[in-house]
Length: 234
Image (cartoon, rainbow, N blue to C red; front, side):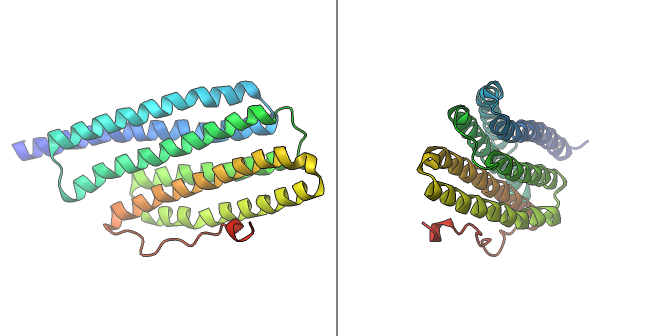
């Protein structure tokens, strides 16, 4: 093996190790999304606390990925496509960390809502919305590993469904608050949860866009128009 081949082989091994951390982090984040949503629906304070505690492991993995990526750049000095690939790791892990934070925030609000009156099946609707985001994230990470731009494009398109679900819940919460002022406190918390899930979808979309950039070398030509219309309602 030539020295150049040896360097390339060492780079591939290091990159595979970092990407393994990405997939582990992704798995923890997927579990956090559904754990937070399930704790809300079942009013399970213990599960909500587990989600909050689990965020520490997600943060620790991001720190590890940042450290190993910095070392990889320093030791291997990647250029062109290899550098783009290495930098994508940082962006994907940053988006995963933010999704984990939103899951933790949902779990925090769950502990507040445990003793509040149920608002017309809203917890189940929020769980379905979270499930949609979790499936999108799984597909986005699959697309990242496989370098599948077509799957990534499909994930981006599906974020509009999440936005529409958020819009519907937002209108419902406004109606409930108007009909009975006693619903205001719970509906405000539920709205923040819905917004957190909608923002998760945006971060999943950012991961999918990173896949397209990796495969094509170009950013998506136009920003996807947001289907969140609530700013027009307020």
